[in-house]
Image (cartoon, rainbow, N blue to C red):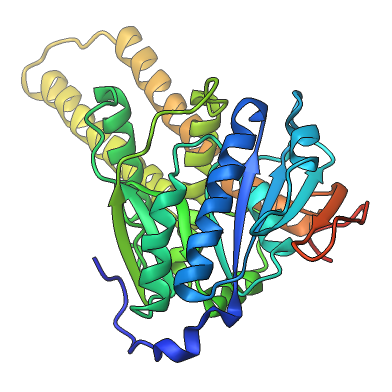
Length: 346
């Protein structure tokens, strides 16, 4: 599915001279990191042979509590350069992606997870769409959700319905963070100033030529996911409040609906009292009405509070992350250690 129709650049202008940075945020992935790095090395060799593409991998340790950072430090730069960026604490996946984007030294950037569910072998297809076909954003999406619960599928459907309600640039359903951005798409993404980031939406919002690639995520190679229901809910709220005012519209429509129901209820009371001459008990209806109105008001206040909180966060302009340690190993030299306390603003 193509999301934009700008004419493609010539393949020659998208040669491997730009290179490719593979950004991998990791959190407690010590058990499978070495195996993933070996697969990425084999991938880099194939991309070098096919496209002459120079590759690097940027591992962003988002405050792991296991041996992830120690293992990442020891990964060899066999067929691709290796950067290890250790954040000062856990800032969340969106901040880790931003840290990887800031430290990427090549032209194009590929985002992928470190749990083995994003197969490195699929990257060759994504790179082909970029270099051979001239697409600027090549994003992946789950081919199906048949293995997920009905509750989760329904929740995902509601999320995309709300986030795309009235949006000029819609976010494709079931799209993930596993995506490739061309050099000009990377440059555009780096220009966006907001601190509350939702990469799925931002990489779609910038436009350019985009294509969807359906795939089936592989089972986790090791361990269990740390992306629990709480984090999923938080990311959903982040996406909704970052890319749509649909929650505010829902609150307004709910208020109008409640006012309409109250008007009908008032007419029924008037009918019962004046026309039928019946006495209408007031206490139960009064309590129910007050509780209904109070509940709706609290919902509306909560929705507005989410948006006001985002405004406060943007006004504070705090750095998105801090780097505790940064090392670079290239295929030409052993290691270049550059410990730093850098911020996203740098």
